[in-house]
Figure (spheres, rainbow, N blue to C red):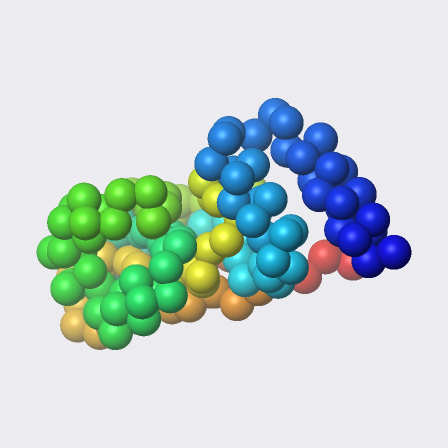
Length: 165
């Protein structure tokens, strides 16, 4: 009975993912076959920037989804300054193992329901890095939320989960 249920699940997953890219289909099938729980649920991000953001300078924001546990561990140790210095080489060294979504946010800017589409369903976690001119880590991990608001303030930012009823 368990084998039939797994096969049906696999078939249904395949049919649902027909419109997705081949990498997404393969990673979804691997996840279903091994019954790994998903760690990344992020789908939408909202941005709300204060009027005195970063002393009136734009802030580059990256949402990063690594697909290897050791890459997540390495990124989790970096502050934003180190991350932004190394990100191009990190992407080259980890081709196909990291997604980076990027925005330049200006003071007073508000963006709502920006879609995040990971390339795979097997992400290890989600990190947000913001390039501020002020000192500080400027790195936050996103939990298993589907939607968050990134509130960018004068000297730092915070991630606020959006709860739907």
